[in-house]
Length: 339
Image 1 (cartoon, one colour):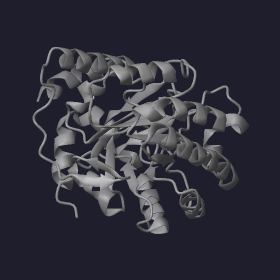
Image 2 (cartoon, rainbow, N blue to C red):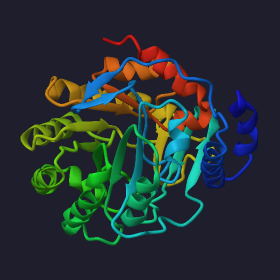
Image 3 (cartoon, one colour):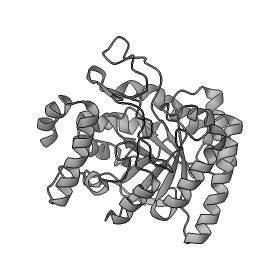
Image 4 (cartoon, one colour):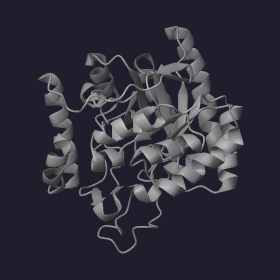
């Protein structure tokens, strides 16, 4: 209810300013023990990646890049929180403005560019957090690391976040870091996933627990590319895949203000493309590797559609910007009885 009153004010601000203000408000609300959402309905627990999730609805990476607002976001009722994307070294990201709303289509275009304070800061924030739920940490590479050395950045991040994560997501699908999506190619993917799995085994021995690895892929893939990714996931025994990131397509937003801005498109227009890739990946993998569906989840119906397409868990981000905490409550209710 409160968000309905706050949204016009937030939408009158620059999108990134509103983003920062919202996180600051959630931090303050948590510190003051002020309720930020109506009580979410009780979800049905589900086991995915060997982890017990209290419900199927989670927060996608990108909203809390540095792990600064974990408790405030968890208060919205999510079954898991994913923070990041984080890189080994701090980086400012792309020049501003770099975040744009397309309200007529409930969409957002961003070219943030992995702006974050670096993995050491994120780890310190997680250490200070009192959150006891499932925390995913999304890792990437620095913009100035050559693509042929990208694996070094992913390994550096994995080693640092492993002790503090419920699971770790390997992000190779952001369109806002130059050449990053090249890592989705068959040979490049083998060269990345193999050393990450070897390191996971080493870290599991060191820390006495297995932290699952998930791969986040793009929606801008054809069937052959999806099949190649599925084969790589199976070959390297990855624990999960997240489908999908934002799209470079502008289908459905043509001629709208900001539609010609560079960056990834998220929100309602990406739902069909994202869900198509999710379904294709599910068919390729069968039940061998669990999937997390994200992209265009704006209500309970679209959340459930991700499960029907083959996902075991669902994540939201842009829908939260447009709907507020009510989306979390609705999505949990809509997926509670999914078999």
